[in-house]
Image 1 (tube, rainbow over the protein chains, first blue to last red):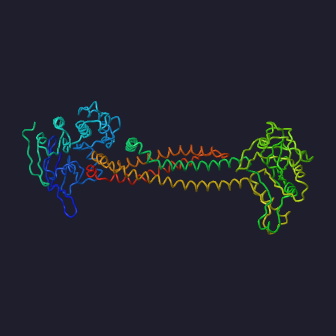
Image 2 (image 1 turned 180 degrees about the vertical axis):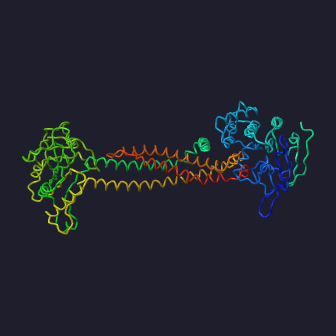
Image 3 (image 1 turned 30 degrees about the horizontal axis):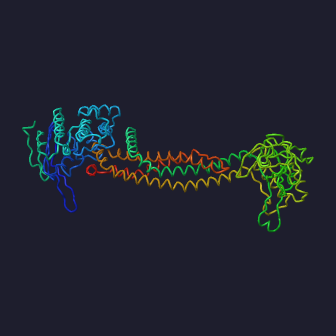
Amino acid sequence: MSLIELKDIVKHYVMGQETVRALDGISLTISANEYVAFTGSSGSGKSTMMNILGALDKPSSGSYLLNNRDVSQLNQDELADIRNREVGFIFQSFNLLPRLSALGNVMQPLIYRGIALKAREQAASAVLKRVGLADRMHHLPNQLSGGQRQRVAIARALVTNPSILLADEPTGNLDSTTTTDIMKLFDELHSEGNTIVMVTHEPEIARHCHRVVRMQDGKLADDYFNEKAH
Amino acid sequence: MFTFIECLRSALISIKAHGFRSILTTLGIIIGVASVIATVSIVQGLSYSIGQQFEGLGANSLSVYSYTSFEDQMKGRFGRITADDLQLITDRTEGIESITPMLASRFTSAVRFGAKSTTGRVIGTTNSYQQVNQLFIQKGRFLSESDNQTRRRVCVIGTQVRDNLLLPENPIGEFIEINSEWVKIIGLAEPKGEMLGFKQDDIVLLPYSTMQSLNGNQTQVDIQIQLTVTNLDEMGTVTEKIRKLLRQSHRIKNGNDDFKIQSSEQLKESFSKITSAVTLVMGGIVSISLLVGGIGIMNIMLVSVTERTREIGICKAIGAKRHYILLQFLMESLVLCLLGGLIGLMIGYVLGMGLAAMIPNFPPAHVPWWAVAISVGFSALIGIVFGIVPAAKAANLDPIESLRYE
């Protein structure tokens, strides 16, 4: 059963007088527990792809089925609900809320789901322990290192038990040692059964993934399985 | 309810995080509410104390005094209430509990004791003055019927007179000099305080007949009559009856009355009308500052939304719905305004009390519950009204755009 089904996805932006086709008829399926990397040069449409997969944006035309639900027809609040329940975002620049502690940040998505404080704390601290931050729970983001911040962000994405983890250049702001650690964490999460979709332009990172989708000018240029993956 | 509590929680976190800015932001509201409360409390204190003093006057009392219009003064006609009028009213009006004449002094010399002198109100009256004015005696006794009949040179004084003349604590038996006559003090009245700046304890009461002789043998006396009615419901009919009698005896057919009959209730009403008008006008002026404060809140909230665009984007990306963001920012401005309102309330209260205490002879400030309710309610309203624009702006931000915002 396929988790994600994209059919003829087109996304165009109107910029001044001309129309830019960021995505130009993309059809693609991703099954549960896949480990996919989207690669391509900048402007190839991989960021737009992320936004649509993450229900942040709606395609101009085409259909997007996530867990057999047509996401392309939903309104803003329904999209917010999809993002909350089905998607876990991990960003290049971490995007943690600066005034909340690590624990607070991880608890935040559960607020939107209406979960009580006690239960939120339990769930969040369990996930923080999973990513190895048991002793950093009450630190503010600016008291944490880059790698630790990204771990908090991963914990925040995991806490809602989403269908897919969407990571946009998750190691772009990290040094090489931390990158290795974070990628190891991703590999573990995948082996625990999570579906991971990653956007990266680094071949090193793409090599971790089982499937690599290369994009060019808003189209799929290449889609292959990585034999050598770990 | 869940969302409400969570929004309140995050609003409090955000206000605490920007502590200093929050205080500056709500300063407008603080000052606004404080000045409203201070103003209202002072004016209300004034009117409250006036009300209290009218209570003491007795709601069932009427006073009759002569009144000459300016026109009649020009023609040389002066209205007068005489002892005959008193007799007439006493004999021919039913429903009067007690009635007393009040004869003012016609001389200008001061009241003396030893080297000290004072200019109190010297009034000639009868025994029933005590009932009409609800005057109580602290020491000695009040003027009696026989004092009046035998024209005794005795008097009852207020505490203020005793203090001004440096009389002993118990002045009974001392003699004071009134218009070159020695008068013995037989009673000391209980202090009544002040009313509208009139020192009510600055009085010397003499028997009516004694006063007449001190005034000299004048043919044209003008007295004031004070009376109380037995039944409050009969106030109107008694007033009407007295008016008819006086018009008859003064031979007025078509012209205006040359006297006035006033109840303490009327006086009280006219004063409370004045004070409520003053309250409204002053409250209105200072509430403009509340409006200015509200605009300040909106301004800072708009800045805050722009500043936190990225945060809003993050919240939306992890699943915050529009109404949640809206409520969160609305709650923030509401909490700011309510906080300002409460702080302002306290400052205004202290300010009102302080000012009232600093002005000599001013009645203590009185904060009515409606002023508290209105100012707190008003600041909450300002929080919502001026918070709605920034909150809507925040709620309608595009998540992708705001995530890209630096």
